[in-house]
Length: 336
Picture 1 (tube, rainbow, N blue to C red):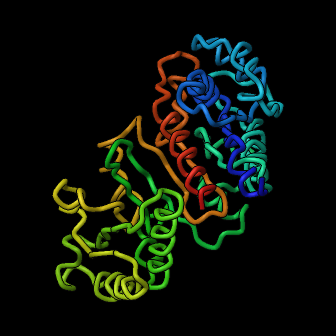
Picture 2 (cartoon, rainbow, N blue to C red):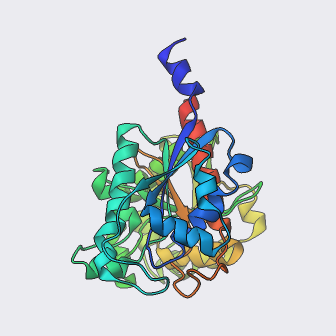
């Protein structure tokens, strides 16, 4: 058997970072993996976190973690000790570096080929910053750690015809968005979306709809010229490369079934232009995917939910969907 065939026959290895220890990440990981045998029979999972913490939070939501990991090597824990005792719902800056250690371990494993994909439970940015480490978000940190010059944040719903929304800019103050847009930047973003939808999602000819920046897509320049000077020229260049990207469309009317039913992704110009629509439609079952990385990374569409941590009331649906997508992407990637 060739090495390629051997690799294709091996189980997929998926890493899950359990995220902020005061939040819902550890318990959602346990809940999601409790159904691993039924959901993902061809995959193995490594939960990264403090082993005692994960077991404790699993018990709080009725999951027998010891029995679950007895199914090794399908499910295992890569133990990383907490920086300080963790209490559900109470942030502690002493655990900021612990959270980053989980993420670093997952990234390093994926870069080395140990993991086929990583799935990240939510973290608390403030905890990491309070620990003295400047941190903007998962997306930016992944780009920095993998030395990727441009990545694309895409959120997606689930289902037969999932709604996908990618962003031309991510975590920026609104006043800085216009200056951050450029013709080449939008073209690069469209290249990444087109490439990853083809190679990681199995879409042979992705169709991308692109929003304008301004109300009414600039109203022919009367409400702003970004559509004329930046977005339209970028679309023309992308079309010349064989990328099926259309627009710019007014964002307030684009998100309708009659437009979206023929689209594989919408590219919005800034965070709060596209994501409120997607989260309204899919919250709790949506996912976050970082496109353009040399590794596969998916995540949930929600935060740490400190008020729900340890109560058993948090829903693992988004994490299950993120694992579903990570497995799907890894399968497509392995198939070439």
